[in-house]
Image 1: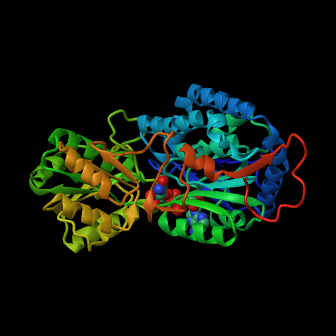
Image 2: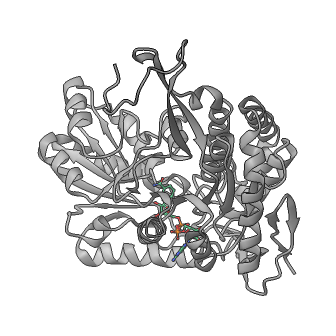
Image 3: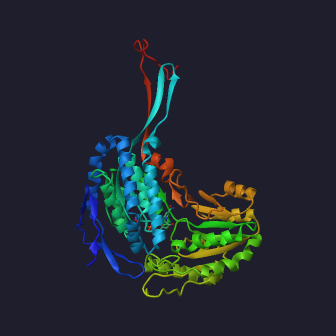
Length: 497
Ligand code: NAD
């Protein structure tokens, strides 16, 4: 019997009383490596009650002490980087280097969280009126919660709980049921870093457990990362329950290729950005828009894509791993079939992909369509697999119009040698994260992760200064300390002089 993943409630790892288990599988073999419980209502309520009970003490813990927990945590994560990456690779199928990257991007957010004292500083101005000063403080909200997707089981939980907790909140994490072992290890190390009991709690499960968090009156703010339908649902139900919600959702990211770009750079970058991590990245390039003569590079790009070979996580020559589940594989295969039926030109077809020694893996080979048009389903939907859609435009203006008409707005990039074209693109494109000769423009944590349109519901984004605002309230104080007593008589106006 595979081991049962434990809940983490009030500083203790405990077995759930639930009989409802979801198997966690190795996606290269289908071997069941763990069973994840769907926490009972009582367990979820206990976790929230415990997070609420320790909030006051944690909020009163000096900010420098809270920051020091993050410093120790960063050091521990670095010390255990390879070990975490191996757990992550086993349950997601990511190649070892890619798994290390997943962990590393999370470590960078913990580093950012260690800077929380300066991030939390408010504003002040003296003499806003005669003898009156105004200043603001940033205070934590209370109990916050995070619901995370399968595709970055280290990075995305680390986008959420370290910053929220560093701000003085307590936090309930509900990781993806498809890969809960990586977050479990992250939480063990957080405890080892000296985080007091109860500031972080972990409950497992799926929709029912998420609903319990969405409806719980003691949860003040909720961060979500995942697909569009679930993101919309969570945003609606969370805000209906008067919570602060940020919901990061799906994507269709375009790369615009100008004919003056460096051809080799374009091809090398597009290969990695489209099929890397089996295309299971919210910032993957899933659509390449060739402007004018750049379309002449399509055959060479097809050749380069066809050379990429998926494989097991510890195969050093593998370009990427399997899809997360047989259901995800079936979905991607049916989208590929749909693209063929719709009349797109399938130049590289990954549907018959086999990996020696792993007959049961969820493999899909690199797939490249050209002649994709905006009315096709393979263009309109996020495929979330190693599939690149090739499109053509006559001019930069036409390419910008195409990208802007797309309902998603997570990331985009332009490859060009022309500064004016790049400037026009960055200014006019309606997408939240833009790369110029950079294929996947994920900002480092001192900036924020700023998806737009159907890729994000809410206003304050992940990490950077925006996340600190999301996880806190601002209190503004107006103070007068008269030297010789307050002026005589009531003041009947609102005017301050
Ligand atoms: P998902 O929406 O299926 O699941 C995400 C989380 O929501 C999981 O914890 C899951 O248990 C929970 N959930 C699933 N169904 C639910 C329901 N009906 N009600 C309430 N909760 C539910 O997403 P996924 O397949 O794990 O992740 C892939 C998706 O995440 C892709 O669409 C990808 O683009 C997106 N993503 C977006 C970003 C971003 O920053 N915009 C980053 C990473 C992933």
